[in-house]
Structures are given as structure tokens and as C-alpha cells.
Length: 446
Image 1 (cartoon, rainbow, N blue to C red):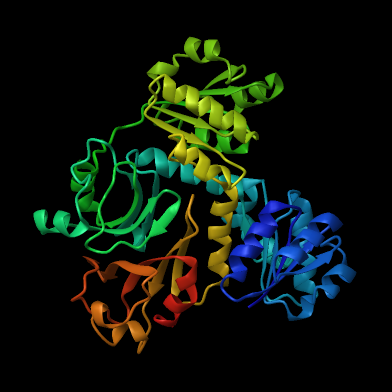
Image 2 (image 1 turned 30 degrees about the vertical axis):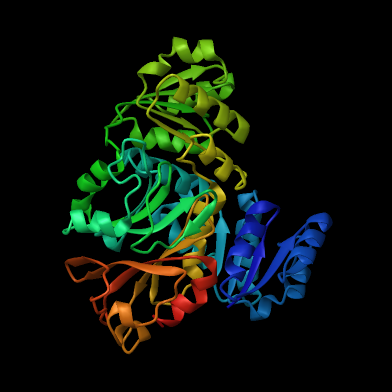
């Protein structure tokens, strides 16, 4: 697919890198000459310097042959105008990044399509959705659902008290013959492996698991985790993400939201009637003590500063908060955060990239998740007639070693993948894959 991405920094470049792995022809438009030079020297991505709302620049980027135009600069008006002009000049499909969630309402869809904007994406809305999901599944570091919730994808750290520490995967299966989940990857010492039966679980391993919903209780028991309900929540940062998260949860939880900007706090007080708004610096230990940090079940830090988010979450952990979630703008901070105990993080670039990447997929790819902390992805495929994956049992199809089939949904039946199972056309299949396997995996399903 020929894709043009208009960006003004890391989000556009990260999205371009992600999509270029799938053999798309990528062109990036950016106003900064220095950034364009960096893009050109570090990748095969084509780069054009200029304003994405300029017809001349769009034509230079070959907009007439563009199959997907994506505008993700920080100014939403620029994105909307750029997408509209791109469609008028020949782009087949357009996506614009926005900040105003009112634009996402169904009543607005027809208007935006009429001016040439096919899809809108709001990173802050997606990040708030992610936080809500993570607060609902408190034992997992990452948590997604596939096939309308019939299969769950979780990342869990193996605790010191876990029953599986120093046990092999096949030994765990032998002792628990009716497992409703499967280990599909282990991340250890910054390396991700696709495990086999003789691989051993170690303390502090980050383990990726596919599970049926009914398998969660045994999974938690074996990993040494305990589910708990979040009743008291503290949020640091009253920007769009903090505000949207509070709005979603204030009817279910007791929420305290701290922000250093008095004018913003006054506005939040009017919009969030059931949230306690506090003006102050969340890096202050005295302030956190005064606001009963030790009595919180969860702590979410979503300021514009990653260092503030990390520091305040570490303070919350020190006071015994069981669930902490920092927003990290720099992807490189994710591994560092995991090494200091901040397992659960969110990153707008990854969340937004996962959402946008769906629009580049063929019809048989029904879902995609870019994972935090590792260079890997989880795919959801709808199996086509006569596809290679249906020809033999799973153990005999020669599936790539750097990928693994986790689970299969057939109608209302849910199956955890095992060697003797044979996939059929119409099945929904969840696959975990390292980058080296992306194209090979797709060839089994198309």
C-alpha cells in the first residue's frame, strides 16, 4: 500500500517505521528540514519537507497515487485541512488526528466524510480507554481482549511466590491438564523468546499469555498474582487524558485529581462534579501524604512530563499503592521503567499506531496490537477459504518459529491452541509474532 504520513516529530516517524515493516511504500511529510534529514539517513522511508496543507507539497509527495493519507501533527485543524486537501487531490482514504472528542460523535461523521476526512483518531481518548481497561484488570501488566472478549491477551510478571518459578512449561501443563490458557512469549533480560515445552519460568519473567475468561483465576493463582477492585484512585495531571479518565470513572470510584495549574483546576471543578480536584505539585511527598496516598488502590500519572510521571509513580509505590500507571512519551523509557518495577505503562504513540495500523490491513486481519516494552505484535486473523493454515494440524503446518498461535474462536466455541488442533475457514485466530515473522505469518492466512 502507498501511504503518506504528515507529522511534526516522533509520532509520524514511529508510525512510518511501524508500517514500513509490512512492506508498505511510505512517504513522510514534515516541516523540519533537520528531521527530514534524519528520516532520510536512517531508513528507506521517503521524506518530503514542507507544509502538508500545501497542494504543491502534497503533489511532490505523489498524493495522486496515495492509497492512505495519515495526518498526525499536533494541531488538529492542520490535520483536518491536510486530510481534506489530500482527498481532493486523489488520496483514496484519509485519517486525521484530533484532540476534540466531540468530533468523534456519530452526528459528526457524515460532515467529516463530506469534506474528505474518512476517519478520525484521538490519541488522548485511546489512552484514557487503555487506562480504564488496565484498572479493570489489576493483575496484568498489559491487557487486551480479542474476538469480542472471547480470548484475553495478558502480560503478567512472575512473582517470587509464584507456583511456577523454576518449573518447565510442560511440567506446568502436566500438573494442570485442563489449562484454559497458554504461554505464548517470555520477556527476560530485554530479550523476547517464543517458548517451547522445556523452557523454564524464572522469577521476574514477563510472560505473555492467551487465556479464556474462565482461565483467569487459575492463571492468577499460578503466577502469584491477586486480583483486587479499585475503589480509590489518584490521578496526576488534569490534561485531556486525566480529564477523560476521570469522566469515565468518577461514577464508579472515589477519584482525587491533582494538577499544578490553578486555572485548569477551576475548569476541571466545573466539568468533573464527582471528582475531587486538588491544586498542587504531585512530586511533593507532603502533598501526597496529606491527600492520603497510602489509602489509594491505584495511582495514574498522565502529565506532559515523563520524568514527573515516573517519579510520582515510584513515590506511590513507596507508599504501598498496588497499581501504578505512568504515561511515558519516550518509548525508550518503557524498558527502563520495567527494570525499576513500573511494569504497567502507557504510551500514546504505540496506542495510536495500533489503532491506525488496522486501516492498512487486509480484510482477513481483524485486529492488531503493538505491545509495550518489546518489538512484537499480536494479530487477530479471520481464516480464509483454502488458506495455508487450514491444510494440516497446527503441529504440521510448519508455522514460523518466531511466532505462535495462541487461541482459536469458532462460532461460540473457544479453543486454546495445541498441536493436534486443525484450524478451519471462518475461525478467528490470535497470533503473537516477532518482527522477523510478520510477513511469513500473514502468508499463512491470506
